[in-house]
Amino acid sequence: MDMIILFGGSSYEHEISIVSAITLKDKIKKHNLKFIFVDKEREFYLIDKDNMKSKYFSTFEYKKAKKLNLVKNGFEYKKLFGSEKISGVVLNLIHGRDGEDGKIAGMMQFFGIKAITPNIEASVLSYNKLYTKMYAKEIGVKVLDYKYITDDSYIPETFPVIIKPVRLGSSIGVTIAKNIEEYKYGLDVAFEFDSGVIIEEFKEGINEYNLAGSKAEEFIFSKVEKVKKDDFLSYEDKYLDFSRKEAKTEEVSKELEEKLKENFKKIYNTIFEGSLIRCDFFEIDGEIYLNEINPIPGSMANYLFEDFDEVIEKVANSLKFEKNIDIDYSYINKIQMAKGK
Picture 1 (cartoon, helix red, strand yellow):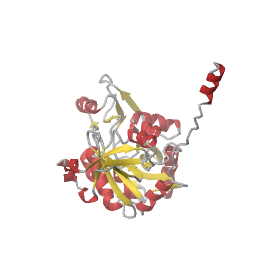
Picture 2: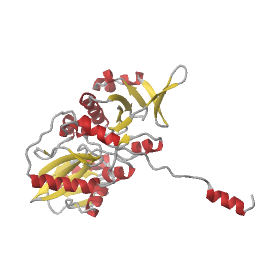
Picture 3: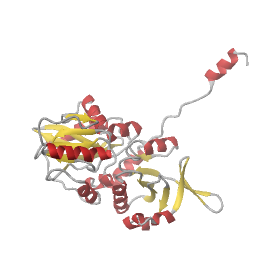
Picture 4: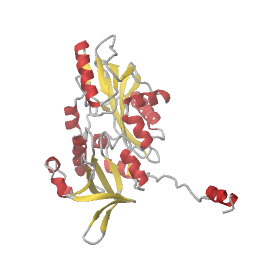
């Protein structure tokens, strides 16, 4: 199968996307991989597999690569005589803005390109943490109590709290505040990145589990990963974490595993069809709470699956184009006939 790894983007998580793509270069072995890089100017470049090294991008060597245009059913680059088309199933690996906010999903739909990606609706719900919590509550998945704010007028009654920008991942702009001084500093940091902020009580020693999956004809689940951390994973932790190739798993009870899977199914529903997502859950006194949805997890959470090649192939083969709408202009024709024209 021809597969296009689409990465980069105009995002605070641009560099993490590059790390994810480099990791998948070695992880996906069964399929014919092509790499398309989206730079900060949102230009598309066809990257040779041998050049998939971080320095190639940080030194702007990529600008020597073939520049691509997005066209119907694929990408193309100009040649001396004519053009050449690059096609295949796109794997959207752009973290953060552009990749997770629905822009890429919309472009793929519009140009008739099959893509493993959260669709526009799924992107809207998972990119914004406020909408994620609202969605989860509507479908019967528990979330921790939270406060959504757009200015610094709100002061929590108790500490510690965790402060999160609503539209960023990879722990960018996230702060744990144990007192009012740290809280004010944390708000300043968060508002540097976003106009909206979520405030939650920070619970010490909480059990946190990651579960990735998708749905082809039936649900495909990864291994359950228990997160080991002191407070929370920082941006630097996650940056390094995205390049790993093995899961940090340990045995969990069958009962807990089933609870996690049932909550995952509720979240994935039909809205996330065509994507491979990772859900991060809390477990408190036997109850499961959704922390967040990762619609494009780092390195696609490949390390959580026994056979990632097989998983990605099943998802790719399940992709469907939007249903065509037959437009025959019968309404306009009737109007014209009524006018005698």
